[in-house]
Amino acid sequence: MMDVITMSSKGQFVIPRNIREEMGIEKQDKFIIVHDDDSILLKKIKKQEINKKMTRLLDSFSQKFQEAGITLDDVKTEIKKARAR
Image (tube, rainbow, N blue to C red; front, side, top):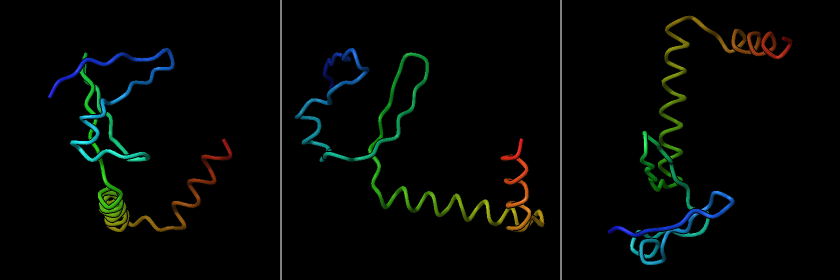
């Protein structure tokens, strides 16, 4: 489906009702926005997806830290150093 929409002076636009209904888009739904040259892509994401992806990302960081021998205390020390600058 294709539609023409207009951006407001505040940089907002409305997703047409028929598209919202077809996709089940509701108030407070979350989206990922990606841009490339002259294109913008919106992808609806579900809370469960966000939680799964964040958990996988954090697990990956944890694994890399363990492999590198970096401890929680090391991370806390580096954060303190960065905040003191």
